[in-house]
Image (cartoon, rainbow over all chains, first blue to last red; front, side, top):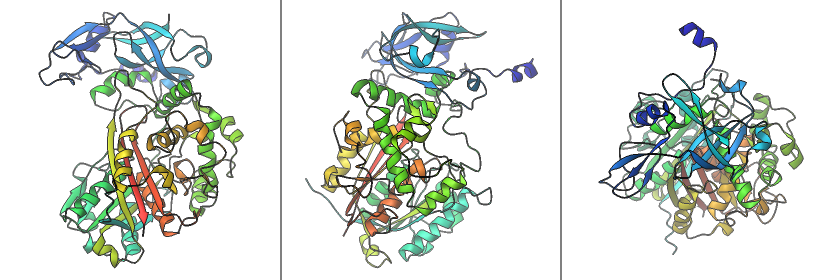
Length: 142
Length: 396
């Protein structure tokens, strides 16, 4: 099994052992994009972590995004030395502003040619890439 | 406004000449060789050094380790490691330590074998990081170059900046590199194709690496290193070369935040502090040593430093004004920069070194009667977590 996995390079996978972000990644198994908001100061905290960055008596609550947002900026990668991504060029990486506030880094899928079909300001929706323990939140144009 | 003081000066510099050491020396040896040469440049000895600065890229407790290796016993140790701008931070901290009377002679060193160790910096996979933020991003395959490209893309969207305008940065630095024998040797050793002055068409016609950044908008990955010696006014009086005073410094931090403007860097905060302390304005600057990891880095930083308004950088750089022999200046990266001379991963020390050469009259692209220089380092990634260090330098 391990031998077989070595032969097929995979996307770098998030670590479920990382304590600040583990709850986010566990929720992705059910295709839920969770983010945190402080009940005390209303700050939206992204990336997830164990403390509020807006106040020192924070009370972080998990919320679920509706999964829609706008491309803030992007680049189409033409050269990558990474064993997985080198076979994926050209591919689009983008910062997406979810309607609820969090800005996250992702890939844009479902476009014929990323060099012409991805734009700043483009509306996108979550497009989950499923794995055994979690799902990866990619986006696709609405 | 002007609180300009002349408490500390750069009195010794050295840039390690080789960009391809072929595994024959290691980063520590590059640091030591450079330190000895920079001390000799100043007319000082190892035993004069009482403050050591190291970007801690080698190992934990690097400040102690490198002191033992050099054979010095500093009372000030500073291992601020904030990427490529670490050396601008170090210069700022050295000025303060000297001003406070805690040190008289500060030594900054850098050594790297990024090229011969085949470090895949620009287009390698990110994601080795253990920070929580990295665990949210590594899946997306954003190369370092793509991170900067996203700044460029947004800058183009917001302000109409073009690839042809960005290419002005690359052609100006190459113009300078062709006058610097060490830069020409570097491009030969790193097997650059068609080593010559470039045109705007050359740059925008080169291979796209990460839209909208082309190959000739990206820095090289070289070996290299260098050293800088900073001394108190009293020590500087008796040094071998004329002092280059640290007139003002500023430091700032930025990282990804919801809703943040990607087209501005932390330089927006560090620059006014440095210029204010020096009591000078960008219009007075003769030499702009600005971290050129990529074309967009310089364009963004020229705006952030106040040479022109935000969004006007594209129009402002047009027509070759950044070349050392053009009026209207400032002269940009007159050593050839990271784009065409030397980029072993953390270029900040070379910004100080070439600024000193200019203010001494020793540059291979010497600006006539250069009096004032700015060295601005950007460490980390322009479109992500980064640090900004601005240092204003002047001669007597």
